[in-house]
Length: 269
Length: 264
Image: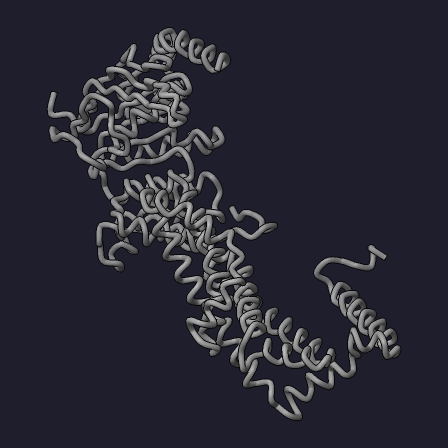
């Protein structure tokens, strides 16, 4: 295999609680994960298992307690400049219009304004927001905001795309539309994608590979499945594919126990 | 009766004016009694005083100018320094940890008591009043900005960092706009306090300003002039507040207004 685009090696993240009690919580333990250039990898796991922690480590927003992150063979220090990160929550700057939000990354990089504006308009059209350039985030629907966030992330043309349950707040129809759009954009550019989700259907429909994480604390990968469904895929249609059903059953067999474990822990806490 | 009052309609304005007229009428008839007039003044006399100040004598402009200059200067100096300090302490944990007890002390101190000291330091001209009003405005803006910086959404910050923003760009594009929205919510309070600071400063020692006029009138039991001064001050406080509101509308157009439907 060629050099990995992003490789997490033996990552452990231990958080010390701030209230002085010195309580430790190991969110992620001894986790290794590597993504080849152009590969679409999904990570699924029960809620609260440290999926986002893993993603933040890959993004360079969080330094791991132990282990190393390599980006195209280089050890990562500070923010991962080759990665784009699409967050789960609202990440648009509320005081900027859609267009101004989309070109924020270009502006930070010092791209000349006329060029940035032109590229921004083009990206807005590409995500289906042509004509909404001057809307402020509060004037857009949830789906539109996600589209704007997608354009904002992709306009920088990152080599690695990190996505943290990007569509979890959307209704099912909007969600499937967005999933197809993301797949289409990805097929055109073939960047490495690390996609976090709690939705197994979404993970199988979109990815080349699905990694299953155990319930926390001390989350680590417990299963890995290559998704050999033909591409291009339509996320709604692929669900009826016999191979999809098989894979779903196989992965769910591994995931189910962890979900129950995670649920029991949350109930106790 | 409540059926006659629809919010935002012309009838609301009429009811408001009727209430004003009622108060003035009660005041007028009550002050026909000379004892009441001594303590509360007479509306026609008060009006005559204001008329004389602005039209026939035209001698209030000098004083009004002084008071407004003090207010506006204090407002700007206090807001800008409050914004600067708020950003600095909000971003620097060490500095805020060291300065924390001093800030608390300075805020809880009754700052009006600083007026005599400012009088000694800056003389009886406008700067002692500006200094007093600045101490009032500064803390309002400072605490709002400090809070605003602390409560910037971590997702916004992470997102901006992932998009390649450096420290300066974070400050310029995330912290500052976020703090601005907090500043504006405090500006209505602080413009009022700037006015309070200016007038109280004048009241405690000065040779000009509307506060000085009121002090002079009080010295001669001229209650009509006192009331006239109060009316003029109130009118100009409303005017300043209105100007701040205009600025807010221009700069904060990105903020959702309550009751505005989401456009899809």
